[in-house]
Amino acid sequence: MASFELTEEYQDLSDSVREFADEVVAPVSTKHDEEHSFPYEVVKQMGEMGLFGLPFPEEFGGMGGDYFALALALEQLGRVDQSVAITLEAGVSLGAMPVYRFGTQAQKEHWLPQLTSAEALAGFGLTEPEAGSDAGGTKTNARLEDVGDAKNWVINGNKEFITNSGTDITRLVTVTAVTGQHERHDGSIKKEISTILVPTDTPGFTAEKAYNKVGWNASDTHPLTLKNVRVPEENLLGVRGRGYANFLSILDEGRIAIAALATGAAQGCVDLSVKYAKERMAFGQNIGKYQAIQFKIARMQARAHTARLAYYDAAARMLAGKPFKTEAAIAKMVAGEAAMDNARDATQVFGGYGFINEFTVARHYRDSKILEVGEGTTEVQLMLIARELGL
Image (cartoon, rainbow, N blue to C red; front, top):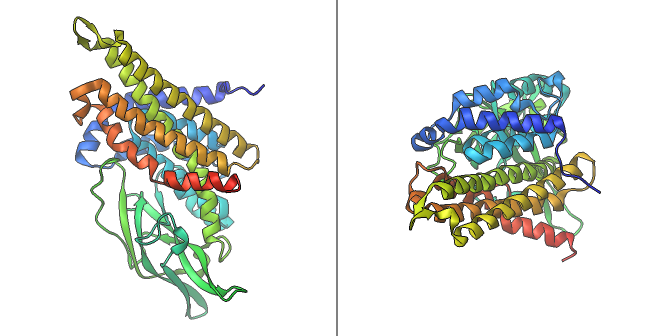
C-alpha cells in the first residue's frame, strides 16, 4: 500500500524551512506587506540556505534535490507569507527551470549558478495584454536581423503580470515571441512561437511601474515593454518553434509548486484559527468550546489535508516519470480553492480582527484569491481535467 509519510531527509528539509519561516520570514511579513516592499534580506538568506537551488544539480550550484523538495519548502513558506513563497516558486520553476530544461550547456553554465544562489532572479514572460489563458495568442514578435557575420533577434511586444521582473537583482526574463508562421494543410495559419533569453539590461527592455495589487504585496510584479530589443541569435532557448509547447510543460510542473504553496496557505489558516479559538473568550469561555467554531475549523483541516494529498500524488507521478498533467491540474485547483475557502473561514473565526490587515488571516484572505487565477485559472484546470475524461 502506498505511504505518504515523508522520508527522514524530506522531513528534515520541511522542518528546517518551517523554522526559517516562523523565525525569519514571519516577523517582517507585515512590514513588507504594508510597505509593498520586496524582502531582499529574506531572499538573500533563502539563497544562502540553498532553497533556490533545491531541484538542480550541484554542477550548476544546486542542492541536488528534486521538485518535491521544492514543493515542501513552498508549503512551509506559504503558511506565513505567500509573497515570499511565490518569489521562490517563480524564481525556481518559472525563472531557472526553463534554462535547466531547455538551455544549451553554455546557457546553463552562465545563468544557473546566478539563479540557484539567488544572486540573480529570472522572470517568465508568457502572459500578454490579450493572451492570458489563451497564451497561444501571443503577439510579441521576434525577427532575425543580420549584424555583420552574426544575427540578432529583434523583439517587440508587451508582457503582463510578470513575477520577479523588476527587482534590483532581476537579471533575465525568458520571453515567448512569434518567430514565424506556417500554413496548415487546411489553409489556416499556425504561429511559430519560440522562447528567447533577454537580459534585463538590454536596451529597449523596460519593466514598467509595478502593479498595485490586492495581495502578494511583497512580491515583485510588472508589465514589460520590449521595443526593438536586440539579443544574439544564440539566446534562443530550446528548439525554434517549440517555445509554446515547452512553456506548457513548465506550467504543468509549476502547478504542483503552486498547489504546495496553496496547501501551506490553507494550513496556515487552520493553525492560526486553532490558536485564536483557544484564546478568544466569548460568553464566559473560549470560542473553541463552541461546536460552530469546531466544525468550521475541522472542515478547514479536511481541505488542507486533501490538498496536501493531491500535490503529493502529482509530485510522485512526476518524479516517477509517469504522466501527471491531470493530477497537477487537480492538485492546483483543489489546493487553490482550499486556500481561498480557508482564508474566508479563518477571517470569520477571527471576527473583526480578521478584517485588520496586520493579522495574518487578513493577508491570507487578500493573497489567496490569486491562487485560483495565476498559473492557470480554475476554469483552465477544469478544462484540462474534462479533456482527459474525453469530454
